Length: 348
Ligand SMILES: *Cc1c(COP(=O)(O)O)cnc(C)c1O
Image (cartoon, rainbow, N blue to C red; front, side, top):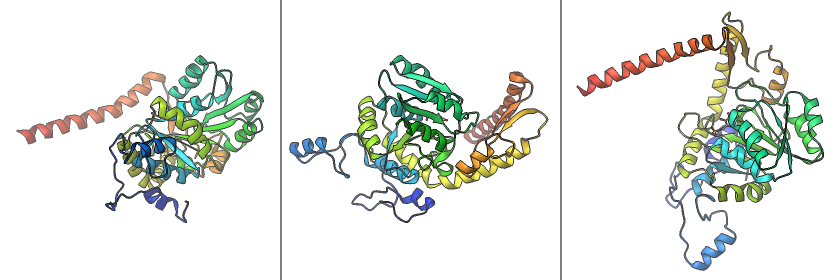
């Protein structure tokens, strides 16, 4: 149950389950299965498991469950299902609720793997997909028709930071009974309350901000109990894209500092974007927190922030861009060389 906790408290404590040992930190239940006192108890659990009963880690696990409850509370949804990667969350959310003959409308500005799922996988199984310019509400209005089953978008998009007006697109979709699936990875659950603005299902790659420290792949789908347990869970648990308990433990620990990190990153991003905005060697700086960004007002209204990422184009095309990146890499290899030397001298 939602307590009167502030976000930062929720991020540390929500969903915690303690074993009989009363451990302070979340335990990692590295077990794939669970034992039953009797065959009858096993049968009963398969028919209907209670809150504290688990069957098999692909179906659920105490550590994974803690993570699901924590993120659902943060997101403000009834439930969540943790997945092996962000792409397992995106493909699971779409595949679990669609069938051949269905129609989906999606924004065109998508992360490459999301585009593959919508453009190749769904269409291969007979789902029709219409792509629109996600920022253009007229295109959404035209594309969404009474037969549309779901709409999908990233807000903001990876990597061009395009926003979708979640409230308006949700109204357009709901008018024909279509499900609104929002990939909220770049906006983060700290800045974007996609569900409050009308989204029905929110997906994350937890690989990004939620782990935040580059340690593990993961994903999660947030939504109503009905969608998560009746539509998504059967698909995920039988097709194998569930999150491992060890990963869930990493994500639980990542969440503890999520609010602090995202706010610090957004401050740095704004400082960087301002410093780079008029740089003579850049042809374009994209940051929704800059007043010059075409969706600046929407970003502030929807996220209260420009977000944690800055994108820019280096003048001079690929050659100049590579020169810029390799100049960064050179410093990295210098560092590697220094580290190797110091390890070698320590061994000697
Ligand atoms: C990274 C990313 C994904 C995929 O997540 P993985 O954890 O790498 O599978 C999906 N959508 C967006 C917007 C992303 O940035």
